[in-house]
Image 1 (tube, rainbow, N blue to C red):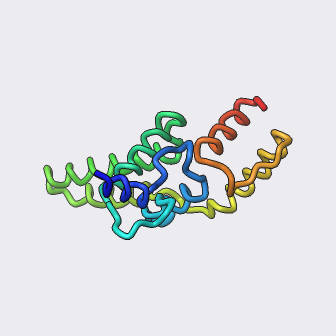
Image 2: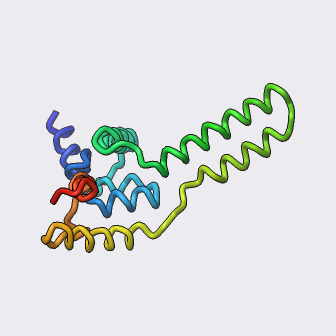
Image 3: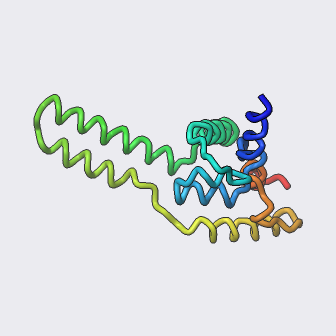
Amino acid sequence: MKSSKKSERKSEMYKSIDKLPILIWLDIHETSDLTLLFIKQPKKINFKALEDAWEKINDEYLQCFGISEEMEKSLNDKRLAALSKAEYLITGKRHHLTHAEVYEADSKVKKKDTKIDIENTCVKLTKFYGVRIKSNELTVSEYYNFIKEAQNGRG
């Protein structure tokens, strides 16, 4: 038992939006590198634990803040692409594949320079709240709560 506690300490990782820094959240979304969740890099990586932690973090985010309109549109386009492919398999009509390709192309969420967006947003939030907000000190939860409250007109 002692060795498992010791290895748990070595593989300490972020498991909540209340602790995960916003810049790491963005890096993971850009690179898909879940090892960024580690606070201290372990000698042996437990990929199942990483995937579970990431799933929990995403579930927590969705529960607190919901899904963005951009992501909702992307998911709907992916759904339509899958339906078009299924229609092709059922009917054999090739134009359904063309429709699927169009939907898949539309489903690609436009990549933008999120780091610059975060910095610009922090400047605006600083102005709105009258308190300096630094991106390198914000957790995911804090960042999106600040935005939510600012959009609601509260300070």
